[in-house]
Length: 585
Image (cartoon, rainbow, N blue to C red; front, side, top):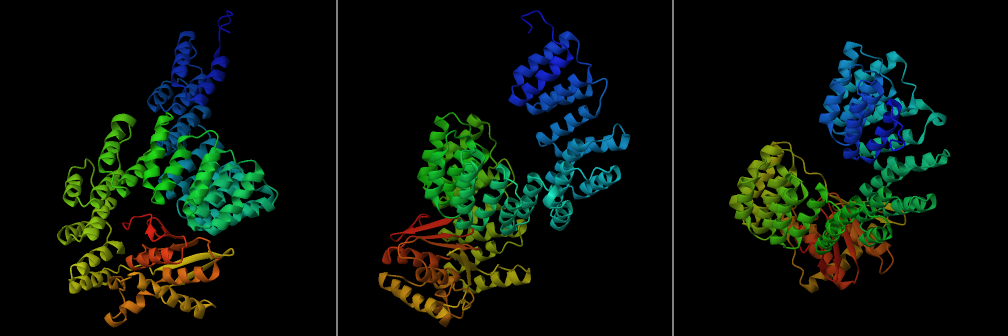
């Protein structure tokens, strides 16, 4: 156009700037800005608004604000551009402040974009009271009937923990008026409030109304299935994804990788990954995280190096997985090298998770003093995850002196976490100081810290069966306990009861009570109910105990069965008498 001698006008620039924003090419946007200045169109409100939008979407909020402040005239589009820009760049409080200024000064009448953006900002910072005030303004201005606004309001209430208020808004819409976004917000609201079964159900209810789920619908349902570790549910959703033609969508593919991994099927995660045509960093990170959760540390390092070779830039969470893998495979030097490369080569400032991984790496190798020094040299204040990694190492190596000091710090940081009390009590017990161990447990009672009751569950023929300690609620209880007696054959393989894990039993009953832990009962039921050769997948709400861990290893060897246990920390794959965690978890 310019080569033909035709000069651009303000309409031209208003059209070209959104293209620069859409491609996030800041250099092109800056060149346009120079041309706009040369042609004297900076004072035009629509050109200025487009400039603000372009700089915001290209992640240059300093220039976006500078252009906004310099506008001689502002309208609703200008204000929306700067508010949405703040939202996109994580400046949520700034977005609230700007909206407040608009309302207070009555600068213009906000539209649905203004309200939707400020409600999203309120949701992201948990500003419930501010969100309620915005709700009031919406009612006054009669905009609550707009689905765009109502969906944002629902999302705000869900993210701020008021599930009933969000659900009330959803139910007020009526089936005919609900679009896919409304159903997605409702499903995600269930996920935020840990109602994962309902989140899955909403996908099927939405389909029955005749609406076609989109990318967000499937990703949310897969996320919920992953939390439930419901492999059958996840597989059904995968079937629908294939039928709907979404199988090549990278966002859904990465959710599938995570779902299969959290359901204990790493092979399926790898299969999904291999079928992706255009791999991005999210897909790579999903599989790296999957392998790390399953204790396949060597494969994590291999995948990470391949990702770097493909020219992709790792994310914050990618390094958490890589450093954790180094710790689980004893790669101390490599772990240090990766940690040091984060800021120098990739521009990622290490956070608490990375420091915790480094402490864990040193602790696993028995370098407890080095780990303590590493914490002392941290540029940020260590949090509970960092001290927790060191306490775990103290427990594993029986370092009572350091364990007492570290536990003291953890009691201050998270006084209601029962795991810290249990670990310290176990260290005392290892050293034969049973009175001190009992004293720590009594301290839990004094501080009103309650340990969550342990339970394990297993899926058989699309049904979930839950077991607690000494459970006798199942209709096949007699058969289960008969199977437990057969499992006791592990004694012939050198099994020695670890009585320290029989916490709430008298000394003479400790050995017997170990056999009635929930994961052992679930194992016995799995051996009864599942076909010979099928993997036995058990889920546990707490950390699996050392005695159960030993029994699982021996049973996998004697009965030639693959046993997969997902506890609160990680997956344990038991095959041929070995565990993927290498007996450190």
